[in-house]
Image (cartoon, rainbow, N blue to C red):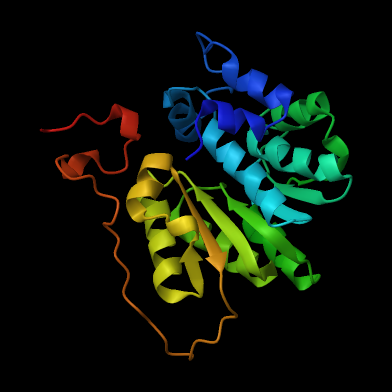
Amino acid sequence: MANESDSSSELPEVLVAEYRKAPPDEPEAPLLGPRDRVIASKPSNAPIEEETAALLARLTRELDARRTIETGMAAGHSAVAVASVHAGRGEGIHTCIDPYQTAQWKSAGLDLADKAGVREYITLIEEPSELALPALAADGTRVDLAFVDGLHLFDHALIDFFYMDRMLEEGGVIVFHDTWMPAIQKAVGYVVSNRAYERIEGRTAEVERETNLAALRKTGTDDRDWFFDRPFDEALYDPPGQSPSDRGRPRHEVESLE
């Protein structure tokens, strides 16, 4: 992955400044539930790591992606990273699906987009993704890059993928965030084993675990027989030398048994 200086070169100054701020004594997002406590547990106190934001910006640029989408806008780091690429070339739209942007995040993502000067390149849909994505697919929406970072339950992550796949162009890329979570690991394992997707840039399950994201390229249309089923490995991410009870905990909270 890129080092800190390389990551910074992919991102707008406003977003880089967010990552350079000292962590606050109290999390910036209101602690309203388990999801928010997980966010607060991360070392950077940021929902999206700088390396993840930089990868999304780089993929948007390299794929010449003009139609991008994500579930889970939250603090807006990923949205601003992608929308800034659209703004730089004066074309493109990034669709964010987040039913909690106003109610729970107090419009933090929209505020950051305003500060970065990229608000006009973002469309926000404040509905649950299991309702918003089918409607977009039914309307014939097409996308070049998708980011799965909404509700982190296996079935919801897979539903996000299912409808994003219907909209994603062949050759496009879908990125899953929070691969430290067993539910996301299962979703990625299913997609790699059962659908026409491949890991980009020679990335492996080990790399995905260490970087907290998986990036998969769509290599073809879905032409499976109606009875197709292939087992998939749900344990690719279990770190060697660590207790099984640590599975699903943020990696910086897990101590090696060695």
